[in-house]
Length: 256
Image (cartoon, rainbow, N blue to C red; front, side, top):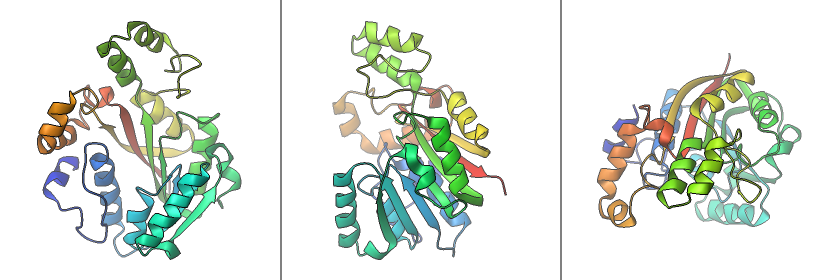
């Protein structure tokens, strides 16, 4: 399914997302399939840690109601400006708050689609956040989770000569490289899937995001963008390449 996106215009249907890049194409492909599956329905979307609206605004442009929860007031201000400029301010709501406090910010069983991208690696209690995400979903609703990959962090540091940091990461039970690491944890695909399953979500798909992009010299990545995008999409769902990705994207559903 993912590799089909190379041949599809991003403006197809009602979703007018940003240009396809190796950093987002896999995620947009999975989201597009869910929106196509529910074509004709205006969804209620919750974007946790959605920042300036890279996903929220295109989803609002497609006709959906989006609430963005983010702790950064500057990011939310930029989101509001972006939504206004795009003509969808009436379909985007900004809420300042931490992912750890999500349960108190969203009504239970009120959301059709949840996005939680680059959040679970930094919150205090990822299990509690995922439980809140699952609780916010209506039965049959879907969750898009994007987490930092453990293997990529080890490989990336080793390739840049940071062998001590790579060894520390490889030996860490959490996938973090000490107190100065900006991430509290990193995940394998299995660890992330267990986290979502424990909250009552059924994991339907797992893809790697940025399998090769962060490892290639800039001259290669910038000089052959179309070829890189196609290769990223081709490798995204295939172990072991998937498991070496900088990020892992899991798409799950609350049991109906």
